[in-house]
Image 1 (cartoon, one colour):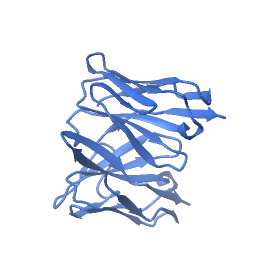
Image 2 (cartoon, helix red, strand yellow):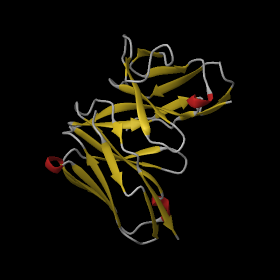
Image 3 (spheres, chains in turn green, cyan):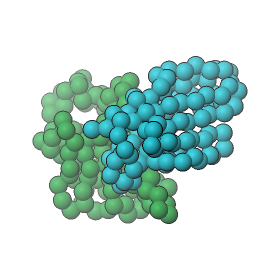
Image 4 (tube, one colour):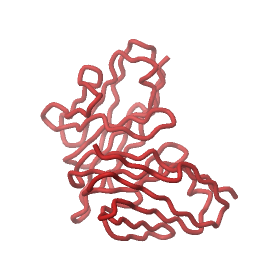
Length: 116
Length: 110
């Protein structure tokens, strides 16, 4: 497996502000994803972070609200823009690693965001 | 999109008990993974199992792809097994974003 780190691990923000979350992997990976886990809920895919091109967003998520960068094969950022209390969630990045013919998805530790 | 249903939603057991968690999905999948989210929020990958049976220690999983369900078995439960167990599926192969079920919240009491 890979070592995946996220910064910050947690933050408390004021509504109307923006927060950029970083995801760093210790090896090059092709696929990186961003998920959101609202309090007490399951995980929802936000977008696929594509290296060198625009991210691919899932239904209900837009680039203006969640801009994503993927400058190389080991790093990605997710920005939560113009935050409201409804954005309070855990944000997780994940990567796909190849083990033989099996492609398994691994998750970072998450960023806990509270918006006041 | 694919719908994923997990049952039971909550389960409370005594240490040493066995349990079976179920995951039903609404369409054919090429990727199915089971995760354990510990009380600190970390997601641990348990199995990649789009079909067949796998075992890892006290845990095993079986997916019957033709009938669109998967089962996770936990034997001789320990308190450290507590947490939320998620089933997640994808239809485009391993390198796709996953659709998660709502999870089974498991509490193992000493």
